[in-house]
Image 1 (cartoon, rainbow, N blue to C red):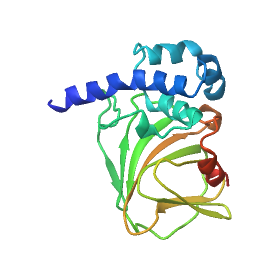
Image 2: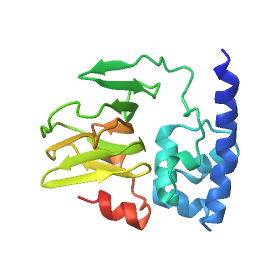
Image 3: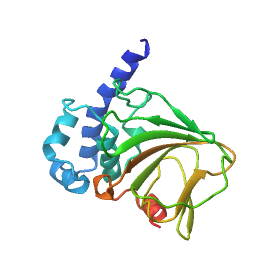
Length: 201
């Protein structure tokens, strides 16, 4: 129960930070809506604190503004208190659901230990968007093998052979958005030039 005031305080700080960041970038609500596919009315309510922030909204917005998620969201990470935080564990990886709805896209926080498994490229239906919270993430995608650091992101069609895991000797924490239909979670906005060059396969 003691964590609830801290969570509420963190959520309350998101709206003014979003508005200030957008204004500092010289981006209008209309331009931001165009870049993210989010309606201007939703963006306006979000900045006014009248719309509950969610990862599905915050991820494309921060990408469009060229920001890291942690520049907008302070610890503790925004979590809907109605979502049962029951982590699942498989092969050393810990997966925590972050979305309440049963539909798509689905958001997860994933912790991957160092050296958890040998790279094995797989394919399946869906589209995935990954954001590195902490550590370094190795992403193998088709013929490409790249390493992403904190604050960087990757997005790909899961029909492309892929694998991702911790790079180096420490674990990595990742936010994941996954859906069967890529257009529902695809981040159309361009991020920072340095990161953009690395995440394009």
